[in-house]
Image (cartoon, rainbow, N blue to C red):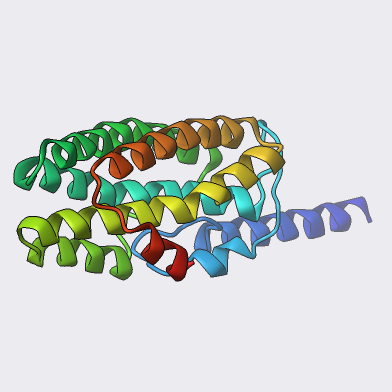
Length: 201
């Protein structure tokens, strides 16, 4: 009887292992627009504390932000119509380069595979900037980036306040500082339309 029970347990364990290998829980590479799907997954235990759907959503968003904001910042440094735009671009590049290293380290420790390219929406924003010239470029750059930062800011605060995972808490703190710096620099350009941002939210 013990031999039979042992065989059953071994068979179940093997089935679970094969299933996990065939369908990894956090494999989001080359899957744009999957935030809603994976955010509904349940909480899992890690050595740094429970990792919730909300935690994973922030990690995913931080990576995606860097994938489009670093190219946007580099472009602004090259095409800057004003010193303020150039400085904002510099802050975007340096801030997200540092944040991207941190988020990739966190994701590796937590077993998450991150996206490697911006979402179609983010690619559209980059295309808008590519097509703009002069003052129009300045307004497009500042408006798109300020709006995106404004939307993620309350999400960061919520995760920072509620997470019980020490890695995610530190990432949220680092992200909060970076986003606040970027918001400040974008507002200093004088090209942000606050009425448009308020109406869009």
